[in-house]
View 1: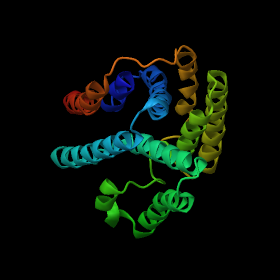
View 2: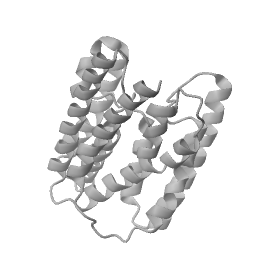
View 3: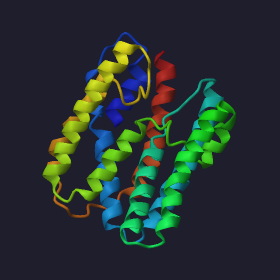
Length: 239
């Protein structure tokens, strides 16, 4: 992640070509998604975990607004909605499987979709609303990424999870070719050839020992926005 952001915010608009940074950086997104899956699988309080992700999403949105104002440029780096929606849908599907208030949870599953459609119809004027109600259709890695995460959650064997990641990477590669050939850019955050290198996360998933690691959640919550702010400022200096 850090290597990817170093290229994206510091070197992307320079004559220095270090695209390998972007390829290595593709490992991050599926690993973070995998971490969210494990958190939902082993958390003793899934609701609190989801609410913590939601609060963090709002904080990142506010930071984006402040940075955009200070740097006179639209700044967008929030990938938290991907993890948030994945966690929400896993929780709701679990409740439906357990046959607890089935109708209520089905309705709750439809709400993000309806809100997303409404946001698309209203357009940019609802950007403030999206701070508190993120649009499921405009998340960086697309709703397809959520489907991968939900699928991972219900796959108990790592072998199946790795196969799913390989198929997803092939899907991204084919989708990138179709999008590029049609010149109709849909979900450019996902459908570009570099994203197919997500498959490089497979060995790390294979090495996971199904044990809880060190509790570094506070470190991530601080490090994620801090390193991006530093790179943004460094990028302005370099340019």
